[in-house]
Image 1 (tube, one colour):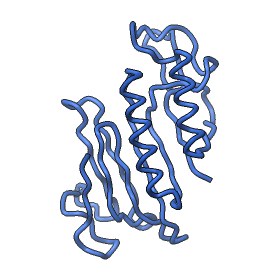
Image 2 (cartoon, one colour):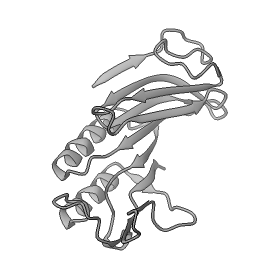
Image 3 (cartoon, helix red, strand yellow):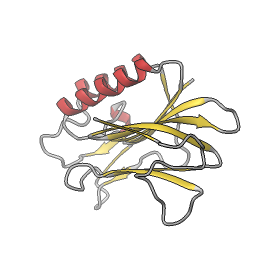
Image 4 (cartoon, one colour):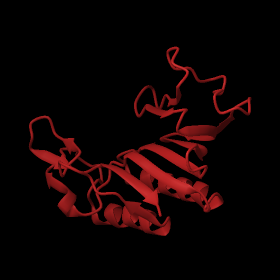
Amino acid sequence: MCVYKKRKQRCSQMPDVLHCGGDNRIGWIHNEGDNGGGSLLSMWYKEAFCYESHVMGKRFIVIFGHHLSSTRRCVIVNIYYVCILRDKKLLWEELTNIKAAFQELVWCFCGDFNTIRSRRKRKGSSGRGDISCGHTSEINGFNRFIESNLLLDLPIVGKKYTWFKANGSAKSRLDRVLVSE
């Protein structure tokens, strides 16, 4: 796990490792993932959010900062979960430990969780062979992660599913936004 901090104290300045095509109103952080797989990009408007620091893990980016109009300190976590239950459990534990250290902040976890919360959130077969996505132990573990971290699962507007198999034979709700109250 890597931790980067910005070098200058003004919000208009970004960490030296970050640039955004010449547009100094946008800040961003990139996590390359594994050999390009699971790559993540987190972006924000500097007029709305002041970057303070970040923690980067294998499948996530945790960004600490504050919302400028409310001055509330907050944390935004961009996630791309793996499809293997054992690795998901490790990731849930790692994120729970990070959140526990900063419990007083406002939290937002968003991204592709590659997990469903109930069997109603999946239609058809995923065609993923031995991958555990959708088994009872995974569903229960993911729901425990959400509950133990006191997170709310925001509803989606419009379509019921966020992932579709190319031939249309399967669909699931894998993408989520989870927030603290």
